[in-house]
Image (cartoon, rainbow, N blue to C red):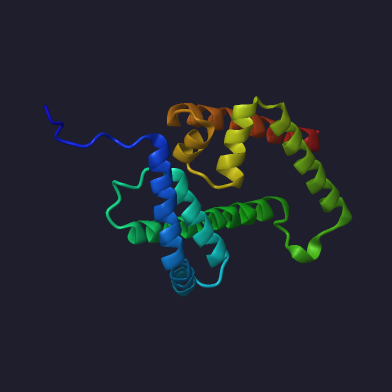
Length: 190
């Protein structure tokens, strides 16, 4: 009895097919992709050459490409997502930088004194101490969310846990930091 479909290629054969397909795509479209990224998003950051490299890397890491009908369009989408993700992270970092500046340096840049610098260094030291005291997943969740700007879902993906567990780690980590800040505030008023 004849099988309606040919047998699936072995993993090694698939890997070779992917490598050949990506190599051909790189040869034919790498310069165009860099040019398109530069035209659409500017010279950086992120650097268009780095974006193209990351896009090809993600395509290789994906493995089986047989389900992708238009590799060039898929590659462009990967590159676009890399740039937009980087820009989103920058916006979040900028927002938090502004919040930190307003919280600790609200009087303005011209009134930075040695005492305020010392106080800020002490507070940063306390934050680092509080982060080190946290369990590893909690600490990583807080850093991924607050520093790297990842969403709760992305934090869960990075840590290999569910969104709900990532949310719990974040809530507990931020509560730890809030307790530390409250204690610092009480110490200053005492």
